[in-house]
Length: 439
Image (spheres, one colour):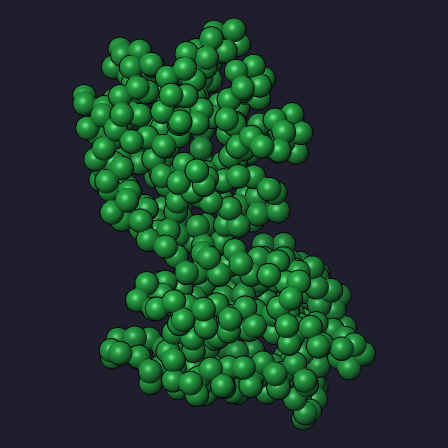
């Protein structure tokens, strides 16, 4: 069974919440109700007792084909040949856990913020636990809750399957699963239920009813290598620390002036494709605010540093503009939004990434960094992502394929755009014509 299926309804045990019932009874009834994976969590239990308990739990789970995951304790997991382990940010380093557990065991990792999640994207963990979504009395040593919007962002940006942890019950499960996460991890809503089997069945039904595939999540994972490579570009590294030469930055701004003029005209054309006034007004407002903000930032930097913007479009700028123009002219609103999305989403993510680490004081590119990492831009991008996910649910297979194609091409052009800014005519950019090796 795929890991996504195993994460659907994930029981995390807590004997103190079991109302005096044995762990074997709780787990047996939960399995009967449809639990898909069980994590044995025993923070203060002596090793010998923990191993014996794990063996008893495993004997209950094995006949039903439900995997046993051990919380934190690699030694216990090895002793009982558990299906895997779940570790947190302060536990044993992932590389050591993988070396000890081997390549075939399940390893889950809790992430407590977006920074943790982005670092987890670089690891080959089997899933991430996004924790906590809500505050919960069962865990008092956790970071600030993600909330639904934070969870949605984390799910979209995760390179791995995701399970939501913290505050999961029959009241919250539907909205949580609707964010696109693969499942929920439940503690008291099962262990403390009067009728464990019925409570588990009810939760399982909620999960399956409200599960929503996220196109944005899928496309971000598909394009993850492009984004990772973008973050390694010398242009962005030097921009973040302020050492980027003004000649290079000026070349980039000159091309961006050409690109953005076309981009916002196409954004207005996209607004005309909307099916209702609310969405139409949203995209017009987004285009206008973007034009005003970026135009003001460009004008300030061009005047301050005396940049020459009277240049011809580069092969990268021409190719990128042509891709967007052809997609807009097709009249397909789904593909049209998909092709324009990387310029918003990737720029925002890069802006936030740089803002988190950049040296702003005395940095000549401070205004650029603040333009793309600011809260208002982030909120606007998240609104567009919600629209994109909603549209994808009604798109047919052929349309989804076209959405994927143009998004990925546009994402690669984003890479090439910064690459050209740094190297200019000193290298070739033929790679932008093919996704081979990038996806």
